[in-house]
Length: 271
Image (cartoon, rainbow, N blue to C red; front, top):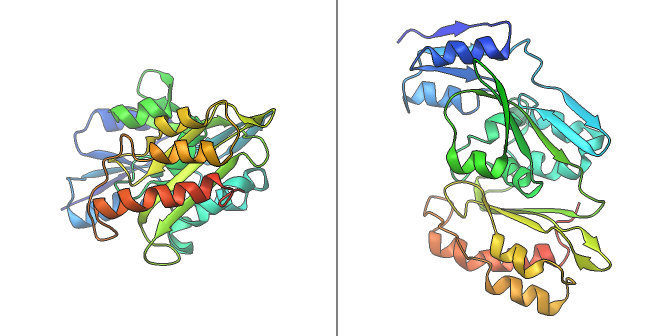
């Protein structure tokens, strides 16, 4: 099957090209799309290149970070201002994958992948999307829930968490860079010794990265003491719908999630 490679001058032109075709896709790192094209997961006749569109920038404005959708995991891991995200980026594949895998592409990674999206969900990130007519911004929660068709992800924006507030852990069977049994990211700022604006997200515990809202509720406004941890663990699996795959069964994921959540809340996985 012939494959057309198209280079464009703007994101808007790329979006228009894709909208006009039923089998055209945007190519950034290609770690997902190239595999699909090679295996025939769905028809890919045209790839629109991201080259030269300036989608790999990382910008800091006060306490706000904006990461271009084409920024790679290697770039994230090397960025001093994003040191707290280095363990997340370095948990994704080996060096060859990280050199190609992009922040935007990770939002579309299928179960049980997408661990960087889990971290962004905990960070309350916003997604900037550009289509053939306009640019819009939506919360990552809504983006993941609705998987909106049309448009190209330009960037992700979020507030820097307070020092020590971000935590991340990833459980794999094949070390060091296997697919997730599960992953957990949390942002737990404290005010006066009590958690304020808690956000906790899971990977591989649902079809897409998900918020652990019951856990957030159990933590909010409370000190991270033994009683608070016990209350959070009681609701650790609320809303979870994991699948069975070569990494783990659904039963195993549900069983070990509270164990790893307890470790995370107790201070392991703090960066």
